Length: 168
Image (cartoon, rainbow, N blue to C red):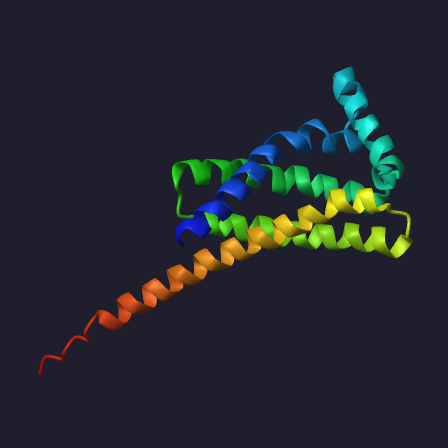
């Protein structure tokens, strides 16, 4: 993929490295008892909600609670796997990237649809959420590109193999 591919992987690595820590420390405060978190983390979360006017985290609608469980059960382990895959140069990184990206795009469609449809979201709040959609699209494209280059490579190898002749 060249230098552009390395840049994409570096951006995704930084994102996935952040996502190793953010969901269990901050997002999970929505679905788990707040008493299990240190005061500094709950204060940071409360300050974020107040500063950005994040009405979804303040109101905790049922669909958001479901999406956060989805993030903790599926996306968080995929983030850990993706960090490992990038560092170790694993061939399955494209597959996990595709899974992660498609899932994030789906989740963010619901969240951004609610924000834009309700008219409650400030521009500041939208600017906080829109980059996640961009990362989801980037991860999906990264997964698709790595899969298409594998497919092209395997087709070339098959066409180079000569068919066996029948013995009479």
